[in-house]
Image (cartoon, rainbow, N blue to C red; front, side):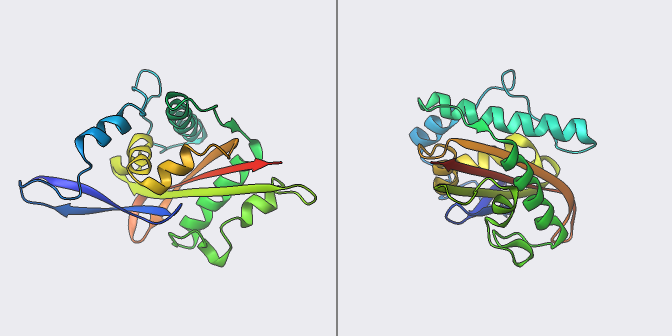
Length: 199
């Protein structure tokens, strides 16, 4: 019997990988072929955006973050959208949110009891006197499920996560990833993708 990966997802919400063992009969959770094919065209080939493990030191983490933003912006380009500007304040906020998820062992937009935009506000991105809008995708996985492509595919297979990645209103984005113990699983990586637009 094949093992399939299923993601549980909420509106602009997080996702977590769970394993289901399904019979060889058609999978009711599988996307329709035409939709799956359309989504597959939004995922960059590995020679354009290499897969990364996001394990190891600062160099490996930096490469993984760069690869994730490459995938995000490739999908946007395929849809005729402008690339996200990689805003340094959203880099700062997304890393701290990922750290909260691991530190508090809380896979939630309100990790450690903080509002989802707590770190975005602390970064100064959402400064006073200006209009702004923000969003967030979160994910975690261990082993190969914590790699860049696994996380990105899961986001793209979720209507709400895909909508955030392909949103026309957001103009800025950046990603953070932190490794550690998550829900009793060692070697987990928490991913946070922050989006924003300032008026």
